[in-house]
Image 1: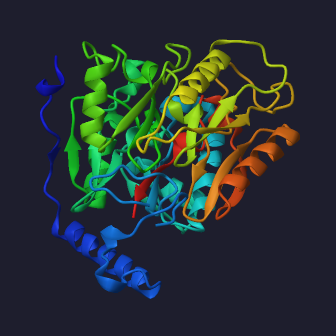
Image 2: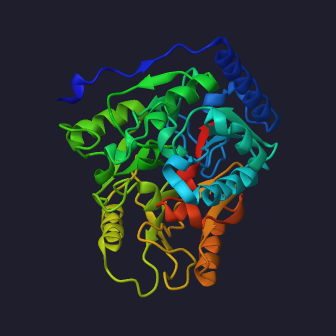
Image 3: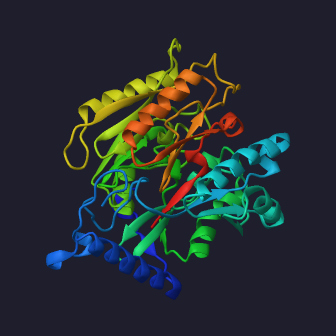
Amino acid sequence: MSPQDHAAPSYEKASPMFQASITRRTVLASAGLAAAGLLASGCTVSDIPRKANGMPSTPTIPRFPAEWEPHARTVMSWPTSRIWAEDTPYVRADIANIARTLAESEPVLLMASPDEAEDAARRCGSLVEVVPIPVDDLWARDTVPVFIENADGVAGVDFNFNGWGDKQLHTRDGAVASEVLQELRIPRINTSLVAEGGSFETDGEGTLLVTRSSIVNPNRNPGLSEAQIDAELRQLLALDRVIWFDGVVGEDITDAHVDSLARFAAPGVILLDVPGPDSPEDVWSRSSAQAREVLERETDARGRGFEIVELPQPDFGRIRGTGDDFLASYVNYFVGNEVLLVPEFGDRRADRRARDILAEHYPSRDIVPLRIDEIASGGGGIHCATHDVPA
């Protein structure tokens, strides 16, 4: 199948409520910029350049915004006993802690199956909005649509979640993208590609990081080549450059999502997950080394080379967590409107080092460490459990 065989992305019509919200956002943005003296001499909102980490960058429409840009809200999901069995109360405690902490500085919408919504609301507190949407698991990063900005506001790409290549049955989670878009009155963009939100990392300026293992994979997109998928992603997410890492096939349920490997701290600046002290060579350390090699020779959509900043893992002999699936990557952090949520694993020296590195690169955010041992035992982190919706 050639890239031309894919139909152009289709948009479902926005509701009047959504159109009104677009107008409100435009008016508010214009008012704020005018107050700052940025709309003088006939300059419009679209003319205002934006900088990294949430400050106004050169906008292009359509555009896949970076996580450090303003959020309208963050979406999360309430885990079920079908997936977590006897560990359900403990993993729910981790999710409730993330939701409560984040809700102190931005709106949080938590999806919960209708029969569990009341308990979720009680556990998460009054600042968290709980909506009755049937879910299977907590990984909102992967089940919620990937949002872009276009001429009409915000739209969501439904990447047809299929349980990470049919590794698990997630019938409810497969419908989450559609349900969220209906709940938020956001138009839907359809695609034949299968992928998850954790597969993608953007700088907001047209550059995407992605692992081959998580998307150029017959368990998601049989019969499609990297070139065909690259072309489709460029069209769907308004990209100028896609940078491919090898990743790792079959060693974890996601086939090595990029959001635990490499993250943009700003355009041209990448935080790279690297092994901790005395770590033996394995598939993950080789994946990190391969990503570094790629970044050292590649450039971003603006032609810039990359500054690579190491974000080392903790010493596995000093952390609290155990188990083969335990994800001890500080790179799986989440950038909120006012805070940056980062995992802490119990290796005090490594936890402190990670906070210091992140504070240096996100000086406008309060760095908030959270204990997430139960989530990490399931192979994920804070970023995996959250999905930002652009303002």
